[in-house]
Image (tube, rainbow, N blue to C red):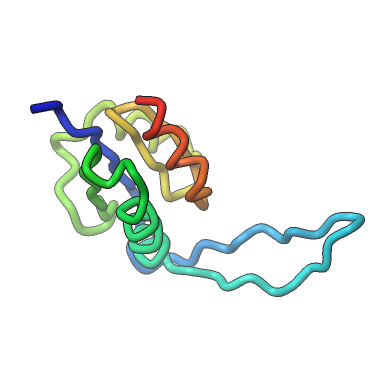
Length: 112
């Protein structure tokens, strides 16, 4: 059996992630909903589970305030550099910082 792709999101569960404004010359700027990190994680998980990569990955959330980070030494070095949270790792490599674009995440998993 093929080994699953590990998707890990490190962040603070209840921290609010502000979505960037979509303003541009030909677009209307509608207010976007700000989500907590865990809500964004849940939305990403649900989105990916509805795609053709649904059986290729396993996804976990690691709360930087509550979970034991002992087993995440390499990830901790990236987190300590001060990138915007949450930081999402795919197979141990940093892939996204801040709000995750669901389609881009799908494309990365599709290529693996």
